[in-house]
Amino acid sequence: MTVRFVTSNAGKVAEAQDYLEGIDTVEQVAYDYAELQSDSLEEIVVRGAEEAYAALGSEEPVLVDDTGLFVDALEGFPGPYSAYVEDTLGIERVWRLASEEQSTRARFRTVLAYADGERTETFEGSVAGTLVAPRGEGGFGYDPIFEYNGRTFAEMDTEEKNAISHRGRALAEFADWYAGR
Ligand code: ITT
Image (tube, rainbow, N blue to C red; front, top):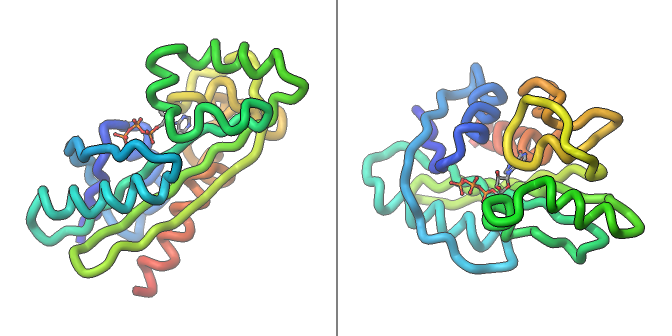
């Protein structure tokens, strides 16, 4: 069975395909589920996955991913509003804001929701790092300003990023559960 990854973000799909290779195929599906205005990534993905599954019809399960970048010294900003802030301020200004604080520690957090019409399950992953001036050509989104062990996520290939990242950890949990369900 194919898992339909409901997202507008091809970067997320590439990481899931790489991670789930040999377990199942992942197909990107465009469906603009109503993104709940909420502080909780869980609430956003659960609603999104159930809505998408019902709207898309057919049997294949769906996967929805909501991710946020949480800057410690900025009380978790931009968090669930990370997509809006990337579009409006841009990642370089997020780094500048953080660099005026005592600490540039930040964390990525991903919650994945799987829905197949019978059940909805969530899987979570997070990673801590520091924000730096943009470096690297790989990845997407905030990757160029997120440094982990001396390299930004944009300086890693998909496999290296998946081995340590928020999404890689959530995908690991999902893969375990999916294989044994
Ligand atoms: P969908 O909602 O259609 O899945 P999106 O890109 O809007 O796509 P999110 O709301 O989950 O998805 O993303 C929040 C923001 O975080 C957005 O600006 C992404 O580019 C960024 N982002 C998500 N995952 C990331 C990652 O692994 N590395 C860097 N930035 C990431």
